[in-house]
Length: 83
Length: 409
Image 1: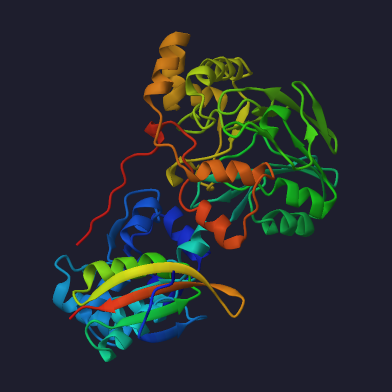
Image 2: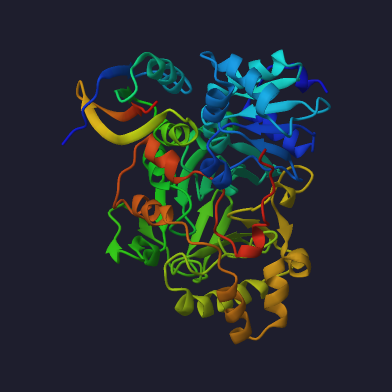
């Protein structure tokens, strides 16, 4: 069963740190309680989103999954804005 | 310092700095787990700090990465680096550290970025000539960040490659520039810490590929290798140009480990005798049964002529190299200073087996898959391979790996 989300951020093809830089900006644009889905091709984004979610006070990392988008494998991060 | 003016260092620049013992401050912005597992180490202690970039981004709190770095260092960094040393910014692939480097320069630091990051450093190769005479050429090809060593022996236009590492360009480039044909490729054993370049190099050059048959069985899976190889037997002679190299079976680190000797001159020890330390006997999961074999094999090597020059399969610290950056020493010399051989020479077989079993470093789970890949039982793309090979080899006894030092803020 896949996670539901309110907004999608396509960070495919972007190198570190841009997936996270852009995700932070998008989080500030959604409402508390809403979920941002980030899709990225950078393998390092998996550990980085975990580390970021631990230190950021207003987000919760709900799930991370490998998904297939346009026939290619991507890393999907589901981030909820908490406050 | 000339280098500190440059805004970017290549991995070659970095190696040169480490070898010359030039002082710099290491600013590593990867996550803590990656920093703990694999960091830049020099010939001596490097002053280092690890601040994950996502902490700088979040705590710095700016939309822009460079702005966040500036804000973080100014407002949140308790132990700020002093301005008396150049700072090398390092991340996984060299992109994020460029933003960090820019932020540090805005704060007045002499900061450079490591091009390609730790991925490039982990795949940096250095080729050094051990001997270059009219009748024989011998090169040590090292992967400094991983402590892996491989060799090219050439005579009369023909070359034999020993333990080639995963990336083949160092061997192909050398063969092209020096004008010799690679005829044979030998793996001294089935490697656990790195993916062998042996089968690929052999098929690319048309060379034969040789491995002891005992190492063509995965020791944990107990499954036969699917790669194609010619079985090495104890005492087998390989000719290379006008010289001959003999295989000496020395089981212990693996069951099929062979040393190679070129007359009474050179001795490739694979993973048995290193410069400062010796190999561990437990990577096949059978430490108790393999340790006694290891002891007897090491004693067999100690019985060879003391003037023979040892060419090992690994090193643990850059300071094990001589002043030309080559990792080598005579057998007699190693009897006097190699930590493992010193214990071996004063202990009984039982006593030394106990010493081995008490000195086993942590088992690296990735090594099971690396052995599977080397046996052809598992495929890996570049990303998988590079993740599996992350960090320094752990093929020696624990004494080889001194506690690492590094500060966190």
